[in-house]
Image (cartoon, rainbow, N blue to C red):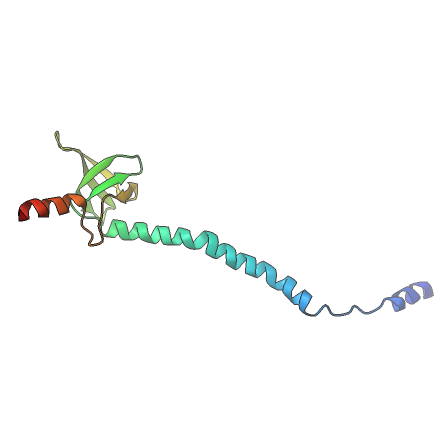
Length: 126
């Protein structure tokens, strides 16, 4: 028993590491914060842009679906989360899609007008 007491008595108190120990504790939270801004923030921004796109979707907008179909919006049913698009101008073929199937609105200028609307305004003005 005295041998154990002597061994415990010889253990020296640990010196405090100071700033090095503090920095070691700050590195993981800093990495998590950096990961949030590098990974999560761009995804949130993309989701917000998609919500804005869907909220501003209106009749005669040219859209591209996630399946690659280019079509013209006929009607938007925001309460049902659906949009009816015309996929063929000659036959008037239309399909009903969920709004989340819209990948992007084509040919928008800074005023929110599509190229098709700009052409119609130009031909009406001349």
